[in-house]
Amino acid sequence: MKKLTGLVISAKFEQGAIVMVETSFRHPLYSKLVRRSKKYLVQNDVKAVSGDNVEIQETKPLSARKRFTITKVVKK
Image (cartoon, rainbow, N blue to C red):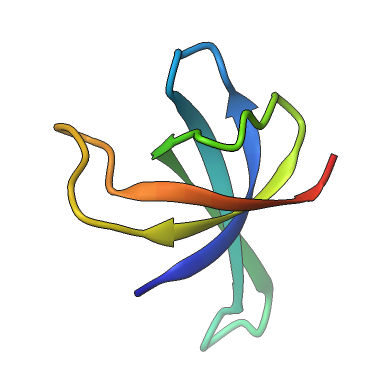
């Protein structure tokens, strides 16, 4: 099971939210720090709001695009 930490971008759905997860790695040739971000549609049972840092965990498919759920709010 994957566990990721990200920022809630939008919480306008009744039971869902959009979380942006940023990852960074060092480029193999140029040794420059590269940041990548990806948005996940997640189940929002803990009522997180926009701007919260949350921890998300992989789960069974809940809808056509939902594959993660919010486990806890790290920082409001």
